[in-house]
Image (tube, rainbow, N blue to C red; front, side):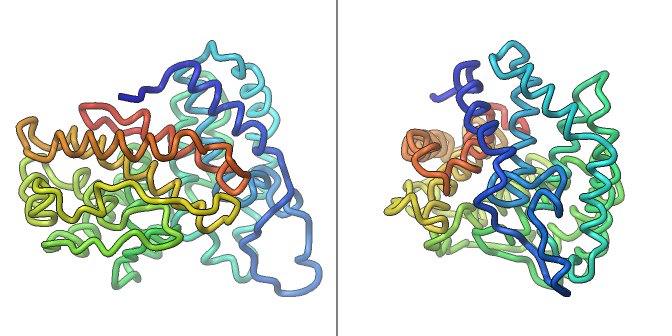
Length: 339
């Protein structure tokens, strides 16, 4: 079974440090209200301007900060600390907050980027004796408030395999909220129950051609966090009643990536990695004698093998795939959270 080692950590950190401060190419999430809005990415986003897009830069920071904490002796440790000291400071975070106040920015990075920013703050809070988490907290609180405002208005769940997937966002947001905003955690639990508790016999119409998340498996992973263990096992058996027999086979089969220079098709490498994360974690949250355990581990290993060799195959994947590789490799037998 593939594991996270210091050599792997150094590989991931090296890749990500290579693009955290790389301003171009850049894909902005911006509504223009006039010519003055046309500014370079580093002007609009003083911290999160690299890595092709804002959310990838955020979770790139999450990745390197997590690796720094897990492997403080890795070769890139001092560079990560120096960059964090220079970038994760109140005056630069104030610039990120100012962007949220712009007209037309209400839906900025909803919900994927919101969730990753909360995950980053959660990680920074684990670095004792540093000022990074305190600097980022106002931005985290701003995005938490956006979740508070948005979730009651979201009548129907977003069951897609791209950035709009609500289950994935709520997994990350809930982990932050349990510690930092219990009212948000309660709201997430309420919405998850309302949207997903009665789901049965999932058809798993996936993969879509540009997906990096499994709608079925992210939903299952969210419910594994919301429900008690025995209730989750019953829910899972109703949700995927034939998975022990290998059906739907699409959830157990790695996907084919035909063109890694195409940013959308390259998403499929991420699907292989995020499915591995889901299967590894779910295997640890079901009873040890559950008949899916062996299939889950086999599926996770197969999906990892299909994606790990290609993390740096092209910048369209290089700027984000290592984050999802970290999620997958850090998921352990007992289903411990990896974000």
